[in-house]
Image (cartoon, rainbow, N blue to C red; front, side, top):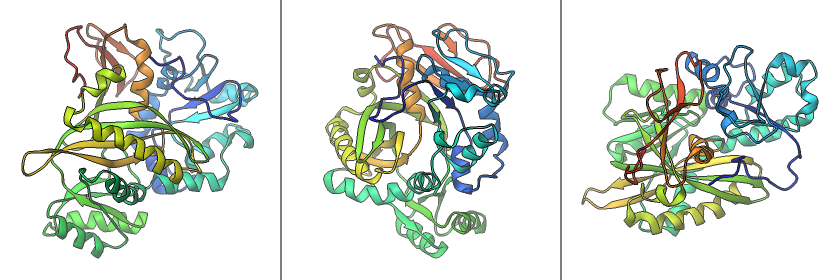
Length: 386
């Protein structure tokens, strides 16, 4: 079971309380690249309703940035406190040793500067640019063939396309393809296409190429299971493994929930025949990403999936996405500390509703979307949440 803080300590990490910020607009802000970007209504809703959620992975003594009227979870252990922008402006920055956001981007830095964040707590412009570059789906496209060279029994192919014509050719080669914007999250910016599709699909692709400088194209796979490997990067090619994550997606590719369980139970969410490959993928990713992310410090996750082949066999796709930020998998790892011994739960986002038996609302008072953790019956099978 995790310690109180789900964030590993890196060498030279400033000692003292951290300020946590849930900036749900992070992926959109990366796509924009502008410190003056105005987030979508969806991102603004998530930020307002889930602002207190970092309290569940913060360490004792830490603070969480919230609006003045944000309800605070009553079930939290003592020692994690809410703080408002006004309190920070009035001298609250003196008690902050570092800032731990969902992810670093130019928009967040601009917002923090406006409420008085000291320059020493903010990343330099070159570090911000490195985070944006590493967060592009181009990283996963380049990493995949390196992984497959070490895992020849795995599957996966993708192409980075700098022009619309390149994207059309790749889609024609794959038949049915998935097109992915360089920066997007939770299934947004991802859609299926064929070379024969009408103008609406390819106009969307053209806009992404024009605005973001390229697009990733890969074959459409018949997925059987989704899971992720969660890591923490300390820079200088140092990457530590945080744990396995098992999650569900909606038919449209959006996030639908995570299993919360110990590592042994989570491994039951992965098809048994793929477990040896999964372990080798974790080792290879630790080495390859350690080199690629030498300019990044913080949490990250790599999405993988079990793929059903045309002949019926299962195969491992070892690198669907690389998320260079905190992930829902990291949230699920932090929530392990809520579990009684031997029990499992499901973490999910949903419309606010009265709690059901065994259900804990992690973000009370949410208006449109709330985070909940639901304890499963003791006799629930090992594939909970997947």
